Length: 137
Image (cartoon, rainbow, N blue to C red):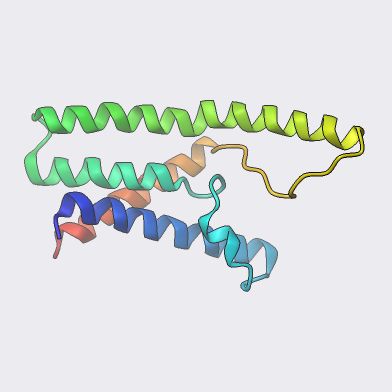
């Protein structure tokens, strides 16, 4: 399998696994597998997958290529979106939820607020590890 496909897939899988383990450590409920596929929280899976791709390109082709530059620009946009845009949308969703609850309406209990910078940073670290692992095959 191409390292450019393997690295982000491995980054995604590792980050989702870490996210699930963090959830289990917090809730002590290992049977709730629904959290495994939800967005938000620690770590950022989007960032892990994108950084894994960026690192695979950097390590295989170098950093002086158009493909690396393109992947880096899109990676920065995705990380920014995870921290800023999705977080703002999540905060607006929380405000709407509170208004609906005041009106006597209820929604599903889960909602994501996007990512904190540390969640994106941990996702990036997982992505780097995933790229290194994928290139060793």
